[in-house]
Image (cartoon, rainbow, N blue to C red):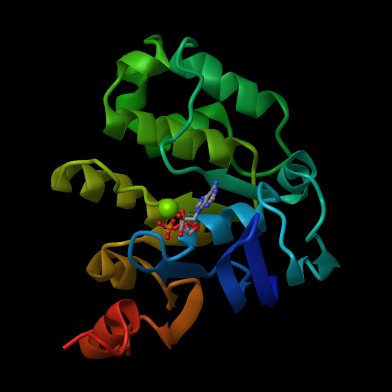
Length: 235
Ligand SMILES: Nc1ncnc2c1ncn2[C@@H]1O[C@H](COP(=O)(O)OP(=O)(O)O)[C@@H](O)[C@H]1O
Ligand SMILES: [Mg+2]
């Protein structure tokens, strides 16, 4: 069943068009990767899905409802959560306070404080630290937990690997298997195409704001991805 559907979406920043006629869908429980180079429009697209950026044309439907012009806080109530680029925790609050804030306005569902501590047991060791004082990988665990605590039907993840060491990235993505078991759909934005393929059921490639490839992740070739990622001029 289709959970989230974008149809022919355009997004502008003033006069600058960042997204051109993008259509994509995510089924319930599915993990979809959006790959593309810096500036391809990946974050813009995610922000449009959660109402942080307005679309100028096209439609966004979630559970068959037109959500294109709903504000962000209502979309969170309806079951869309984002792990934003840069994580954006409340730095002066403790890790646990960050989590409690999210839990306080949560929908009903499988995720609780206990559950996110089971997902990331290491979080117990730094739960009383200020969010600004912990490492990037630790912050990413908190940001994912915070999003899960709202009990979303779909989790939007913007470049979880940004600025993290390879070992830490592996640890972070390891949580996807457990998240998926609870039935949450995931949209993961990634520049690392190998990781994106490994972690997703399907993928879309964006190039300069346009979809250049839509494919099943287990059957698409690396050459097709390279052409879609870099464009025709790539040799
Ligand atoms: N707040 C903004 N104001 C103006 N232009 C923006 C803004 N955010 C992004 N852009 C532009 O929109 C395009 C897509 O950016 P973005 O969605 O951040 O790409 P990605 O996440 O794929 O790196 C880029 O050309 C970028 O410079
Ligand atoms: Mg981005």
